[in-house]
Length: 100
Image 1: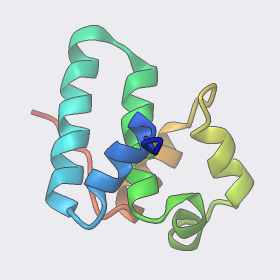
Image 2: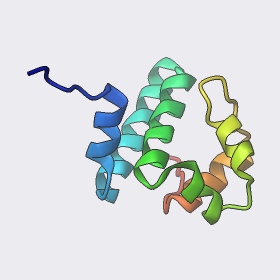
Image 3: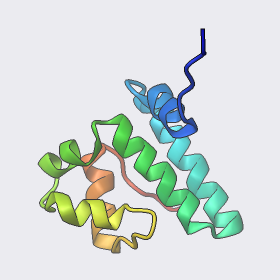
Image 4: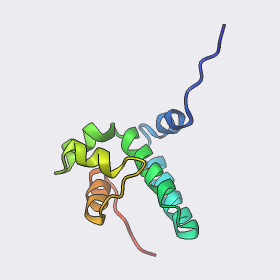
């Protein structure tokens, strides 16, 4: 019998589901790593993981004023979300950015 495997992304999202504190810690770590290496794509991927763990773009659309297509484009692998979009998304996820 062949064993079924899930993708790394699916495993991360499943691990993050229903654990808001873990989601915050995961994004905090991604921000800290971004401060060290400047890897914007890795930070956006972590944000996408949390978005997916909280119901994905459809759920996010209901919590923000942005159309679904705009959010899909902003958070695609080649996306480049505006700062205002990021701030709205963080608020919709129940989080905020801070400076230390």
